[in-house]
Amino acid sequence: MVAMTRTEPWRIAFLASDVAPAQAALGQLVARYGQAEVQAADAIVALGGDGFMLQTLHQHGARDIPVYGMNCGTVGFLMNDYREDRLWERLAAAEDTFINPLRMRAEQVDGQVHEALAINEVALLRAGPQAAKLKISVDGRERLDALIADGALIATPAGSTAYNYSAHGPILPMGSDVLALTAVAAFRPRRWRGAIVRKDARVRFDVLEPEKRPVMADADSRNSVRDVVSVEVRSDPSVRHRLLFDPGHGLEERLTREQFL
Image (cartoon, one colour):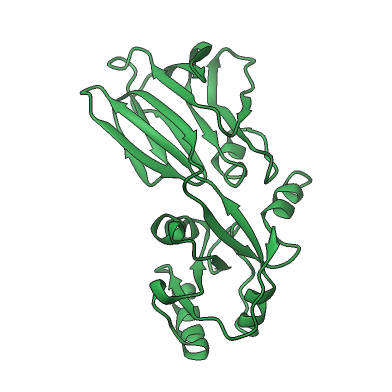
């Protein structure tokens, strides 16, 4: 993490979710600090919850403009506390956190191929009444010949406290250069507790019996592909998202704190 340094006022592009508290905050902050176009802004301030932060990063994060979130939603794990005053000073003192997303490449039964980016996780989920049956390979080597489960997911450190954690996956420290591979409601093998793989690993899921056990692939709950036969996932170092956090309240501290709750 690197603290931002700046003396003059920031040109801020405020973005807000549709919920009433975020819209009210948008009006107050724009009246006080002005509103810049995203293309000309020094920073984006996202007003909402974690879902809106992910939406903002997917839409604008690749511009290398830092994104500072203020929580006007529910959980706000990726957000800072909402306060209207001293925003320029908070931005100047904030610490940078850099995140590389996952790139999903999903092939459907009919041969169509879809790609999408995921900041939190890529999940494969059963799309019918029967459990999914998945073969898992890492860097071209088969590691699990048949996982029978509701699904499986691979999560980044930033996303390890989201769906991954609710599926009993591990919390990963920021900067650990690893990904979490976690089963969702596994039936066989019963004692498989998932795995931790290198950040640069190439993870492949092959869907066994896809007609009988249809599976969908999902990137950050935004890009869903139905009837997949194979999904490859890898970290994409060519894309880098910049998040700003108040000192002492960054992702690394939050991830550590979550492990003691």
